[in-house]
Length: 404
Image (cartoon, rainbow, N blue to C red; front, side, top):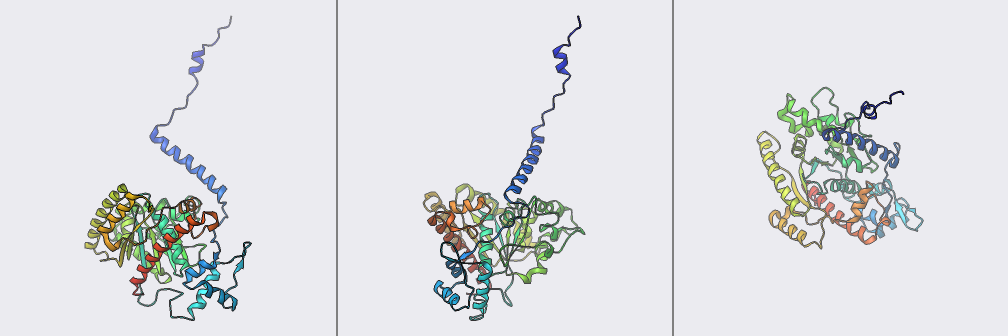
């Protein structure tokens, strides 16, 4: 009788793949997640897909121009303004370009810079750093709504994404893994080697006239690793200021969405800024974290000032975000902050709202989404809080220029 192979011996010859260590598993998971996300992004946003700005109602155009809605209708009826397009619901709406044509017409009838508010002679470029180390403070949400508001008001705006996570870039339809290549972030204009490029080569137009963007991605982290090795590391804090000089005359306002740390890039942004906007979620843990952030920032700025950095800011403000008026602990915290910081806490907080959160899920701001997609009361309350906060920031910028 022929001997049968021992089943145990046979099985022992089979090679069992080794299980990756948990440390290695992190990289495996990262690769799997990235590939799946890229496939998902391509399904939702095909490679040739582009974001666009919705048409604005007459009421919105009137708000951004600062005129009465009845006057807008009169100008359209007299042929002095573009005749708005009639929608299926019977309402007339304007494209952004049509609003800007009207803005130019109105500018010719009134005092300079009333409707086209570009900075004039003697009014320096305003560079605003939006910053906080604590996640969840709505830093990127604040920056994205602010730059769109300012562009809709007629300013020439440059948005800079300094966060390697690149959430601001994503909000504007630039996917950091797919759409932002080598040397296409601000790092390309900051680097220390011969591959450094002019900032004008990395600025991108957006779907909103008057608003340009420098996108971000993980490449920004290179500034943290190359700066300590650079020969001229002592002047790293001037790097952003110098990079922006060639395009400064083309903009009125630069808004930087800063990284959530106090590395070399954040310090350079703090030194380039003419003003600071610190976002605060009024919860105890967030405020405790901010106390540490302020301590670190203050100490760092003092060291940089002693090394020759610019001496002061035009203004600094604390913006309360994700505010719930019915939340008693939050109200107490806001009162506590106002008692400490006084008028530096902006009067107008931004509400926590499902409208803002739901718009963010589709990578949009409230200025982009249609009001009909939400409960009107919810949308209107959120939009009012955003407009009031942005209007207060605009007033601080205008005050820095010496305007009323």
